[in-house]
Image (cartoon, rainbow, N blue to C red; front, top):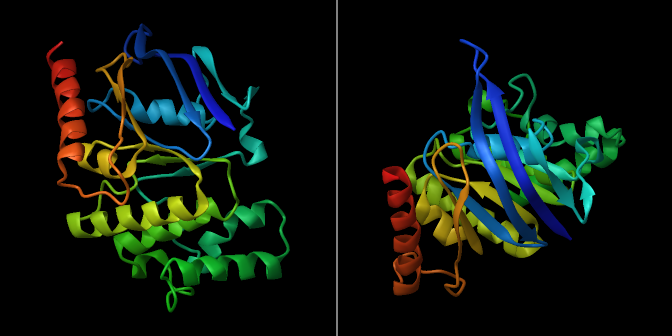
Length: 252
């Protein structure tokens, strides 16, 4: 399975005068099955817009997104999306939030509840299955959000700065948690982050975007052996390469 992003361009009409605002400029890249690819770039360059187009939530002005050579259809459950702000339903418990995708797919209650309980146990949420989001920590909320996405078995998982609002210790713990999940299930993951250290620790490749309108400046392979030492010379070399590219992008 391959995800091909081909020539994606996006313009918005500005509210003030209707003039076009160019956000994405002919974005091309390919993600192979089972790869973990991160996208970094300056704030406001269009990273979230790019994910929304891949997820089918926005239409491109030009270009296309193909999964195994066919256009992605959001109603086929091919794409899962994890948001930074969790997007949990406050009136639903942990179990009910995790199983909502299966509920929408008309999976019988007994089957979906059993599947959700499996995620509760494996995601370290035992004892909180009947708790509402207001009773959960930020890290626990994000585990619920990830479980809710994975339970429907999407082919590609998109993650939009999922750890951006967490403290550094919780963030590091969830990075390792996500890495363990990815190594177990080998889902194809496209991960947006502002944190270059995070991208280097997690990824097979890092796509570096320019300032708006975004274009690809570099695709950096991360060849550090796994499990990774965040402070190794190999990881530091990739970090410097990405940071230097971002620095030049801001100055251009």
